[in-house]
Length: 453
Image 1 (cartoon, rainbow, N blue to C red):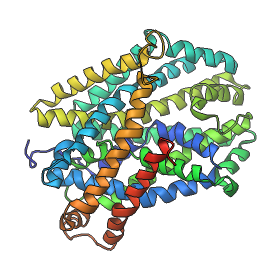
Image 2 (image 1 turned 90 degrees about the horizontal axis):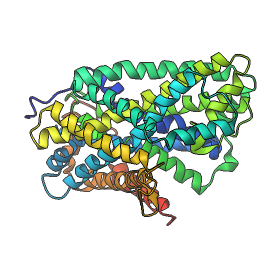
Image 3 (image 1 turned 30 degrees about the vertical axis):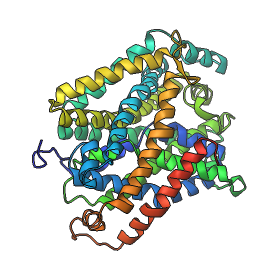
C-alpha cells in the first residue's frame, strides 16, 4: 500500500477520540483510583500530573512523529524513520505486545460482560463472602468466561474489519461520548450519597505526609502505562494522521482526557466507598469484589437502583476496555496487512483467531488448567509481566533514544512543526526531555519493578 493510498482519520475530533480511546482503559477506572487511595489521594494526583507533563507527553509526541513520518504499521514506521538498521525491533516488540495484551486483557474485559448481566438480574446481592465466592466460581468456570471472551472479540473484530474511518473512528465517536456520559452520571450519583464528602475530601485534599519515593515511582509508572506508551498503538494511529495534525496539541489533549477520566473515576469510587465505610486502598479486588458490595450497601433503600448503578459501572468498564483493545488489535492487523500483503478482513480474522485461542488458555489457567504455569506464574500473569514490565518500558526507552539521539534533528523538527508551519517555541524543551528526562524516568521504572531501587 503506498503512502498516498493509506487511510486517514476523517476529522480532528476522530483523531482525538480514537487516540484517547486507546489510552483510556481499565487502568484509568480501577488502577488509578486504588493507587491514589494507597498514596495520599490528591498528593498522588499532583505528582502524577507532573509526570504526565514532563514524561508522558514528550513520549506521546515521539510516537506520533514516528507514525506520521513513517505512514505505515509500527514495524515499518520505525524502520523508515531510522533509515534502516536494527531500530525496527521496537516496532516488532510493539506488535508482540499488541498480541499478548489483546489476549490476556480480553479475559478481564469479558468479566465485565458477565458482571453486567449478573448485576441486571440481581445475582450480586449478598455479603462480601458471597460476592467473593461468585467471583471465584465464575473465573474458574471451564466455559462461562470463554463465552464472554468470544463475544468481546467478536465486537472488536466487527469494528476493525470496517477500516479506519468507518470502523475505528466511527466507533470511537460513539463509544467515547457514551463512556463520558456514564462516568459523569455515576460521579453525580456517588457524590450525592450520605457521607460522600469524606471521599471527595480524600481525593482532592492532598496528604503530603504520604509522599515517599514509592509514591513517586507509582505515579511515574502509572503515567507511562496509562497512556499506551511503548506498545505501538500510538505509532499506528499516528500513521493515519493528516499532515495538518498538530502533534503536540493532540498529545496534550489526549493526556488531559486520560487524566480527567482517571480523576473522575476517583470521584465515582471514593465517595461511594467512604459512604459505606470501605477502605479506599482496597487494591485490585476493588472492581469485582468490593464495589458490588458498595453499590448494594449504598442503595440498600432501593436494591433495584443499586443494580442499575452496577450495570452502568460495568458497562463503563467494558467500553473503556473495548476502546483500548481496538487500538491493540489495529497494531497487529495493520502489521499483517502491510507486511504480508493481506486484505484487511483476512488480517483481522487471523489476529482475532490467534488472540482468542491464547485468551482462552489464559482464562483456563485460572481454573481447570492451573498447571499452565511458567516461572511460577499463570499464563495470564506471565503475559501481564512480559508486556507491562519488560516489552513496554524497553520499547519506550529505546524510542526515546532513537528520537533524541539518532534521528536527524532536522527531521524531528520538521515533524514537530509540521514543516515549519507551527511554532518551534517548545521544540528545545521537547528535545531536552526526550533525550535526558524521559529515558532516565523510564529506566528508573524498569529498575524499580525488579526491586533494584
